[in-house]
Length: 437
Image (tube, rainbow, N blue to C red; front, side):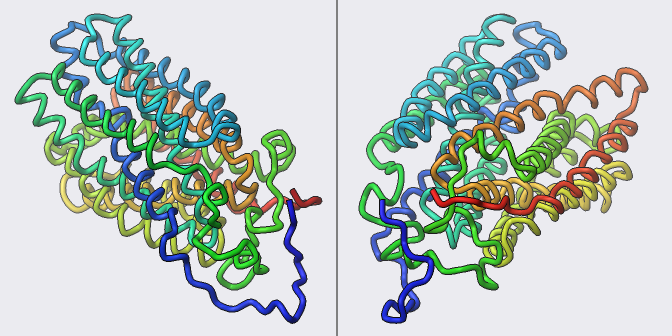
């Protein structure tokens, strides 16, 4: 493999380049957004509309469902950790197609749940496929195709998640009312089945395997420019930069700081998502008004995602990392004072600002700091850590509510965690590279 010179001769002047008109990255971007949209039924905010109808018909307790959710999420952490390396070895196409097929089976299985054990099996398949492996594959796939425009590319892909948040829960609620929860799960399975041929026929793993280069540049040298005001942190995945293995990355302080920045918002936001309606109704909102905060969140998160994508492309990922953690502190403080009216709306706004920032910042940081070659295994570890946080998240809210009859102590206590992760984000600078891969 030829490594481009870092000091090109005067005869090889760099001139502005334009993306190739048939750059396949835009197709990959659309597929990744489609994957995130179809992952919604496996996400916490996606299947929450199924919980009460299933509990009522099956006669199961809420604590049992919470326990099944926790076990399934922890199993998903192990799955995504292992599959990250599979993506590095075999590519995104094979992983996306195979996982989508199992995800369809999981959705059909949820429609056939008859008791505690089948619920646990269905939950585990659902979380391990749709919520973890598919999401990991979609998000890391984008990083293979975009470097200079990665922040903006991730912003576009996240529209899939935001559309899922805004559209899928109410659509499934209407389906449940019309045909029942079992058939609603089956309808979801039939829709998701579209993803299998799309992944198998259209996905290409990396631009290099089809004679292209990231961002549609005509050559790798075009993206090898040194750091400028546009890209101040000189990402590791530019031409000539180092790609770190997971083992090497774990020896750096940066990796551990980024894992803290991953773990804390996963714990806090998932705990909020699981209990948000209950917390807000305790504060005096009606269930309908409480549910509207999700709509506000989605409406705010979409433009915020694009703003943060521009910020990350312009100044590097660290300012976006810090902003995401700081906004989470503000979100929890606002929640502690929430009451019917403007404060509840303000909470929804802060929730949207947080959602639109922290996930995108992390997606940009991993490849920028550690390169593209081993991104699957590195991001797989990050996803595993976030799933452990997500599994733990609902517990402090539930335990403190059972002890004190209120969520307020949990809100204030958990607000300390993003204060610490904000500091970690400030310290998370790109690791020093000693060699070129």
